[in-house]
Image (cartoon, rainbow, N blue to C red; front, side, top):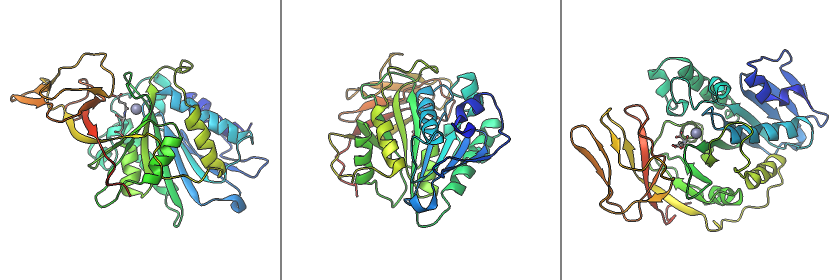
Length: 335
Ligand SMILES: O=C(O)CCC(=O)N[C@@H](CCC(=O)O)C(=O)O
Ligand SMILES: [Zn+2]
């Protein structure tokens, strides 16, 4: 296998390879762009005009997605997988990956869409660098653009694998992309209704990619991910990469749709979330339930029919999202 295919080993060792470009026997070109960043280019004659960005390790302790990308890369570098699309592999937060922690000083996934400019430190610099890698990668005109940012969650979930679909004013969510996600094993999609500061929101809002955050199970250390079943996602990604994806029907195949009703923002150290510590994502909350309290007698009371909570986390920094209140969505606005 080509040495550049071992991007995780290079990243864990904090090692810059001497040889930056390597070519497989099948003529696939691998190019090391920087720490945790590798571009894959198919031979020109086989190029299907799709640019695919696959990122993982934006949170350093979310190892199952990192292992999946590394497996795909090994397949490409050994000639077993034969790409017909351009791919950019990114490991988001190398230092946090080395430490096995979500982040070192700040959550990178709250530093996109300009936020890194208001901040400082290594993670702000890395967010700017990731934006630049993505901007250059998605700069070729006339090609389809797709970004999957792979994550695992802090807590268990009533719905194990799901996607978050960013929002941009005037742009509609695509039924075809949802069908593709269903075929990749996603059981639900959360349709966002406002601009955000995550990596997938950046590529969706600013680079015109179809972009998603994929939540794939519970975060565990390297080598302990046997409970995270990524076989359907892996199979679909190989099909996309090899250009053998079956014609996607628009059928959503039982995919559950939700939209955001409210984001719960933690404003101060007095913030208190009234949920058990082990509550699972997608737990239902009944109307009238006092969900959270903050200073100045701010109260978050559930008013929505069919409300559920995802990503409850009272430990986030002040000013950040401490949970999302979601409701079922009929899909009537899809295009
Ligand atoms: O489990 C949690 O509380 C967080 C899991 C996680 O990292 N989720 C992403 C979602 C990104 C998005 O909203 O698109 C995150 O919080 O960054
Ligand atoms: Zn994450």
